[in-house]
Amino acid sequence: MQFFKPHFFLFRLSTPSPHPYHSLLLSYLQLRRAIGWLGISLAPVLLLGFLFLSPDCPVPPSISHFYYTTMSTYFTGTLIAIALFLFFYSGPAWADRMAASSAAICSCIVAFCPTSSYCSHCPSCNFILLQPYPPVTFLHYTAALLLFLILAFFCLFLFTRTHPDQIPTPQKIRRNYIYRCCGVLILVSLLVLATAEFRWFPSWHWMNNWHHLVLAGETVALTAFGISWLIKGAVFMRDH
Image (cartoon, rainbow, N blue to C red; front, side, top):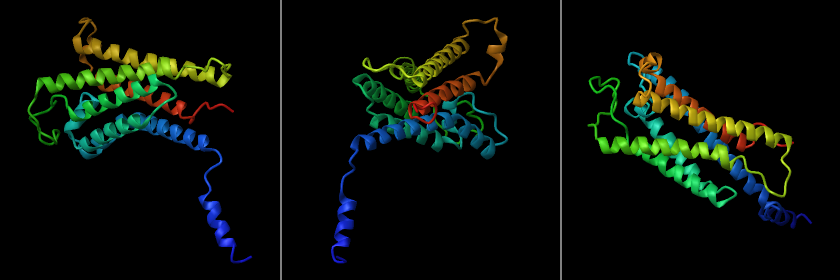
């Protein structure tokens, strides 16, 4: 009997899981959680790291401008990580896969096509020195706009779906409310950013004079995006 015990042990190790769907579900949840945590942490880590590494320099006016600072590696690395997670995210339907792939492409464009510099006369602030190139800047902001719109689309239309043969649970109803709030927050943030960028209301001096309005708006949008993905990843408000 002692001779057969190791073989029995090896057989138990090599036996496939009786619940492959459970493992697949866990992988989807982990992808959603990773995307959510990266979205929420991007702006705070960039800001805190910049203040620690460059305390004498002015804070960049937007998240995109951290590309030129000492936090450049973290900025591009996080966007690429989000893009990779989105590429591998399949989702339950064809629309999820298309939206995730499109968002991943936009995230890569934002990472590899930087905006124009904000402090070219100071090498301490501008850790990376590049000549401004308007077509690349236009591509950067276009991809960033599309990325936020796709993330809002996830919140408003994809995450709120319920199987037609199932009755929404009370937790699902509450989650849908949070999803819609996150989607609206993203859209409102984009509207505020567009208002400040194009100065649609010149009499609103507080908006025109607040130099970090873009940074604040992007932070709100990223936080809403991250919260929605964490809830979708069953970190909060999961079904009992």
